[in-house]
Each structure stands twice: as structure tokens, then as C-alpha cells.
Length: 194
Figure 1: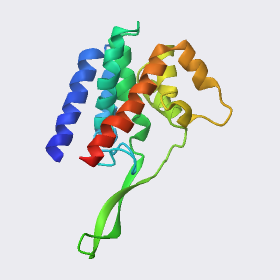
Figure 2: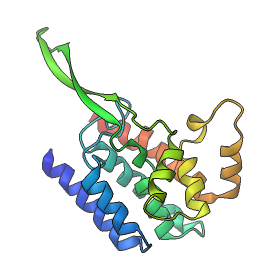
Figure 3: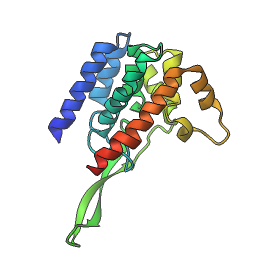
Figure 4: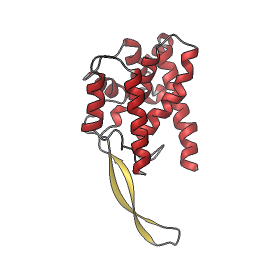
């Protein structure tokens, strides 16, 4: 598993460095690698890719889903890469591995690992990702809208119309949301069942 996690980390870093040419980008990548668990963290506590390295894998999956939309819209490859790879950095240092007892297939009690949430900076989801990115590197308005609203209706308060407005204003915001949903509910659902 460790080799797989390292391979995904390498793919993420190579793609980021080859595509993102912005002041602070190297510092952001250095922070992710040296000061967070981004590359080893799960993507969720139990819904999708609740495995070591799942967050990095999910980010790469979202990139693969978002990349073809460049053929239909005017946003840049750099913007698409930033949004896909960094939309969920709010999940770095967010999950904690614990152990619990479960019965195995022979009805014997065993200890198994699982993830719980330990949010030490409860600032929202998309909002927190935008904030963490901008501590190192500036985002364009389009990128900030896309990352803030990538959860679509899942990230809104009842009656909140800002996501619909963001989708009207920004093709990148809508396409990132669609790529995230496809990755989560199609690609990663298949990963969990195979």
C-alpha cells in the first residue's frame, strides 16, 4: 500500500509542478508535503476512499474528470489543475485513525482501523480550502468560486442561493462540482466494490 500511496503522491506533485506557475505554488506544495497528512489522509471517514492515500487519489480522480471540460470552456489548464487537486485540502489533518472491535467472517472479534473526524479548524468545507490555499498562493475569482462551491447543494445552508449563482457565473465552478460528483459516486464507488 505504501508504494501505491507514494506513486499517487508523485503523480500529484509532478502534475502540479508541470502545470501551476504561480507565486507561492511551491510553498503550498511544500506545506502540503511536510506539514500535513494530505498525501496519506483518507478522502472520507467512510463514504468514499476511506483508505490511506484516498484524499490524494480522489484529487487525481477529480482532475481526470475535469480535464476533458477544457475542450468546451475557456478556463485554463492551470485553473482546472489548481481546482481539481486542491479543492479538498480542507481534509488535510482532518481525520484520525482509531480502532474498533468487529466480528470477522468466522464470527471472531478482531480490532479493525476506522477513521473519525477531528476538525481543529471548523471553518466550513469549500471556504476552508480557499482559505488554506490563499495562505500560500492567490486564487483567481473563478478558482475561488469553484473551490468554495464544489460541493454544490451539499455545502449550502437551507435557502442559500449562492451556489446556483456561482454556477451561472462560472463554468469552472459547475464543471468542478460535476467532476467531484462523478469521481465520488461513479469512479470511487467502483473502487470500493472491486
